[in-house]
Image (cartoon, rainbow, N blue to C red; front, side, top):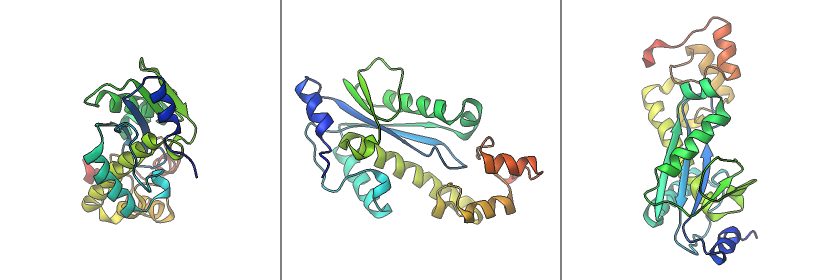
Amino acid sequence: MINLLKYEKALYKEGYNLIAGLDEVGRGPLVGPVVTAAVILPKNYKLKGLNDSKKLTPKQRDKFYDILVKDAISIGIGMCDAKTIDEINIYEATKVAMKEALNNLSIKPDYVLIDAMKLDIDTPHLPIIKGDAKSLSIAAASVVAKVTRDRMMDELDKVHPEYGFKSHKGYPTKKHLEALKKYGPLENYRFTYGPVRDLINNGNGSNSSEK
């Protein structure tokens, strides 16, 4: 079993106490923002079962989200909308959103553990490949970001149930692509993404009902 506090404990020994985990969700969907979360957990915090959000069920994520919101020293959320993603690309947009999440923390961390991404920030930091499965702080950020974005997609589903956002969360599933082809892209779609771009090029423009 992986010790999810390995990185945190090593940093505690070096004198770092306020360690933020930082992660993103939503780089692959065709619609909506990329969402990031920065989470500072109490020192030596333990939460049995907490893991990379992709390995948890929606019900488990919701449960852990509620616990983390109550227990965390601070949580910061960052977002970059579809329009900005189209303008600067998803990689750069993710970095912008990650910096925003850090800036939205109520207390400045003295170290940041990041899932894979390299960031230009003043705070000491370490990118960890597949960090959401190796660090409890990053796993916590993964869950917070995932639940935050999923709930946004659930709200969008209430406005446009014909697209099925509640089930696919904006990812390019067969059901989503069929709805996209039938109804056309809404205003908050990512128009540089292949399936949306191809639809536009074939003459199916934006659905004006979103405006």
